[in-house]
Structure formats: structure tokens, C-alpha cells
Length: 454
Ligand code: TYD
Ligand code: MG
Image (cartoon, rainbow, N blue to C red; front, side):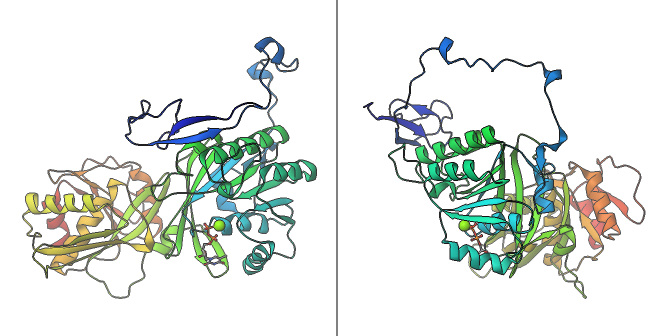
């Protein structure tokens, strides 16, 4: 029998080495090496000449047969749009997310909302009764055409799928599956890698698309190292606070479409609801104007999204002021406060500042700076902003307002939602103003204060 071999791999980039190294030569990270066992190859390649199959030849690009029918529409419109118009036949799609975010709910809802789809739903986490209970809560269980398979041995899953030939295979989750050809426990790097590779081979050979669920660890890696992302065709990341009600499905890798897309869902008692117009939900319908809120015209991927930024500025009770931000980078908040202090003369050092992005959103784009600054100043002066204005601009270290990407798209979304004014950088080159919305150019923070609060 062939000897089992061990290799060391980097948990950061997934590169493998024959021995332990303190620092990974590929990505430069320290102390990231872990050991894993590799199974012996079942049969060795006998030599290049012999392994060439007669029917595998290069093809002329123009001769390759391509029919539009190679995509399969799933039940959920937003998921289809995110995938680029349905799931590509023979592709392996990974849906990653933290525990409790709703991956199992989503993956069950996809076949439930498409009764014609003959689906093999493989679960290694729940019993058939649990799945039944969940699906009756989600509705559509009676008309659906789903086979539930509680199995963790991937070889059995593939044998079953190869025999029954469903339209779609869903595997929940990659971490619970294992193959008998590798000795390590399920969820280990070598198992996860092999399970994904086996499913990829199955998908490519049969043309049946496979959706694979994967848990993300705290630091955002799928299955620890990023190994799975290299193997699969599409990576969709499911984000959102497990306690909040909004979820964002983001395409972070797509071999068959754009990655600048998101889909928004709301978690309700009856499962996930597709939110076609996310801005309308994230903008509050306050009767009275409240101080400390400002609307940000943001762009997530190619999708404009308007949401409310809330700030609370109050006198510090303890010696050092507290700064806390939910859904926004605290360091960036500190930077913006320092800019306000230094460039516009606001004394915020003795003030506690709390910042919150509505709806549990996580905002990473610099275009939100202007709305954050406006909300902080509004709370500081206790001066409510009109509720028909919105903001899109980056704040630089010298207090200047800088232009943002996709300004025209932000503008038309704001106009569509009935906003009357949008505050942007004076360097912004915008097309003709849209009907009903006026563009207010700002050069720097003092300019913002002058135009907004006086
Ligand atoms: P789940 O899909 O099991 O998360 P994951 O597979 O990503 O770990 O569900 C996550 C949460 O969603 C769960 O805590 C309960 C909630 N939920 C609802 O609010 N409504 C529903 O209809 C369902 C099915 C779940
Ligand atoms: Mg689950």
C-alpha cells in the first residue's frame, strides 16, 4: 500500500510546502502553516503519451458550439440576476456565510420557489424532519419536486446524483461532507478540498449544476483557508447581522458574469423575501425631522443604495471620549472627526460620538464620508437636516470633498426616490441635472457647514 504523505499548507493563501516554514514564501504571512495528510493517489499516471485520450483535441474557437440554453433559471429572480441570468449548467456555485445568516434557508427556498426543478437536496447538518419542518414554514413544500438526502459521505451523494440525474444538486454544507479516500476528519482542509474537487468533476462531467454551502470563519475565510475559492466557478457571499433583518448576497467571484452585483433580502417569519427596491426600505419615513441623521447615496457594486446614517454626539461622561461605530470603520470615523477638529475648528475631543448605519448594513465605501460628517454635525448642533436631501462624497485629510465613482447612478436613484437635493464634490462631473433634483457642489467642510446649517 502506498504511504500516506503529509504536507504543510498556509492557512492564509492555501499554498503547500513539503516542510514547516515560519513565514509563507507566497503571501509573506507569519505563523500560518498547518499540517495535513494527503491520501495516496489511487492510480498513477503512466506517462503523458498513454494518458492522452483520443477524443480530446484542441478546438477552433469559432467552431465551439455555444447555445444560449446553457443557463438554468432558478426560482428566485434576484439570485438569477446575481448569477448573470440563471445558473450555468455544469457549474459549481459556493454560497458562503457566517453561521445563522440564512444559508440553509436560502438554499432550500431556491428549489421551493421553482416547483418544476427536480432537485437533490443533500444535508449533512439536519435531519429530513427538520428540513420538512423548515420547508413547510417557507411554503410551497407540497408542489415542490425536491428529494431530501441526509448523507455525509460524498461518494454516496455523487453516486446517487449520477443515478437519479436531477436538474440541480444542493449540498449543505461542504464542512460536513467527507470522502472515504482521505483519512482526516470532515471539515479538515484536505477533506474540504477533495469534496469540492469531486463535486466540480461531477458537475463538469454531467452538466448538472451544483450549489455548495460553506461556513465562513470569523476572519471571513471560507473553510479557513481560501482554498475553495480557487476551485469553484462562482462564489456568493451571504452577509448581514444574524440579529438584523437584512441580508446581502454578494457575488465575489463569477466565471460567467459580473462580480459587481448584490441582491438584498429581508429575513421574515416565512423565510427570505427578495427586496427589489432596497433603498425604499432603508430610508426612514419620519414624520418630524430628527437631528443626527443624514441620507447617504451609496453604490454597492453597480447598484445604487440609499440608506440612513445616524449619529449621536454627546458630552463625554468619562475622561476620554468614546467613539463607536456600527457598520462603519471606527478608524475612518476617528479620521473624519480629526478632520472636523483640525480643518473646521469643531471641538469634538470632549464629545462621545456614536455612529450607526441603518438596517444593519456594513458600509465600506469612502463615498459615505460626507453623510457621516453631515450626521455628526447635525447631532452636534442639534439641527435636523431636511429629509429630502442626500449626500455622496469622500472627505480628504485636508477637509476637501472628493468626487466618487458612479455619481450619475447615485443621482438618478436619488431622483427616482423623490430627493430634492444631492450634495456632492464640486469636482464631480455630472450629466445634465435630472428632473426635480438639484446638485449642490461642495468644495470642503467649511463649505458644507455654510450651505447646510446657515
Ligand atoms: P439558517 O438558514 O439555518 O442559517 P445557516 O444555514 O446560515 O446557519 O437560518 C438562520 C436563521 O434564520 C435562524 O436563526 C432562524 C432564521 N429564520 C427566520 O427568521 N425565518 C425563517 O423562516 C427561517 C427558516 C429561519
Ligand atoms: Mg445551515
